[in-house]
Length: 422
Ligand code: PYC
Image (cartoon, rainbow, N blue to C red; front, side, top):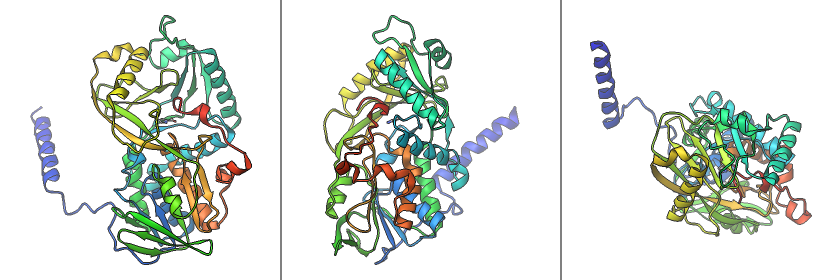
């Protein structure tokens, strides 16, 4: 007993010492560099998409003269402002295939990057409260199964076994009539994903430039030629727009118009409590999704704010609505306290699918329009955009997501698989 409390005292002391006087032996996860006047590839946006693309350009294609530019800090946009839910139970075959590759990359990411990204398989439940949403769940389950993705519709008794705290009685305002159950779904630590990709890209020679804002993009003879920044100009033959919130503004700089509108998506987190929620639970009708982190906090989200805006502030309106809806699902949570809330920016396209690949300007590529799905697509977007830039041809998995689909009228309608209604 005496030994245990001594060692506890020792570790508390050690923690304090390391906290106050960071050890000289802990290297920075990535370095700072002067801006070169030329890079082979310039990636605008230091979120998970941009960082993953930089990593795969270097790791899979040997292209290391790459700069990632961010006007703020790495992972400071949507990549650090989401609810870190992972799943591949989409509605369209294109979506299911794409996100399933992302899940595969996420599952193996800790080993790939030698970094603990805290991937946690939980199972994902999308509740159906009426006949029409149950029909959509069956539709999704069949599309999922055809693509080899584990997904099925389960009844309220099975739901209750997975999540005993859910009110599955038939007397609620919106009784739970079934759910789409997707066992491989889960959560991950979003910051760790950003930092892991950044560290691995840096180790391969990529330059990560924070606090470096893009102010212009020069196009000469239909080809991208230069990126102008607050720290100087960069000559380059390839630029990737991997931003969210500012994706249409950056594309405008290259003269490429994007069919995108931007809305805030708010989220909130509670105080930590003992683990009791072992699945991710989503209700489209009640506009809420909830999961419990490894630290014990409940993370909640809802649908996007009902207006276009660049605001990243939380609102009282949002938490009031959220709390009411959560309590309809799990009345036992009424004593829990919300600790904080935040918002990220979601770029919405007309069909709620992303826009990925080349554009009419040679060398100007886009990976934008992620709506509420961007974080979970980070690895596969990085991998496929790296392949597209390295080979000059759209990778097979993104073939359906090109900008020209809007002109051709070949849309990929993914709204029915939104986390909650858009
Ligand atoms: O599509 O799973 C989802 C999601 C979760 C949070 C926002 N979107």
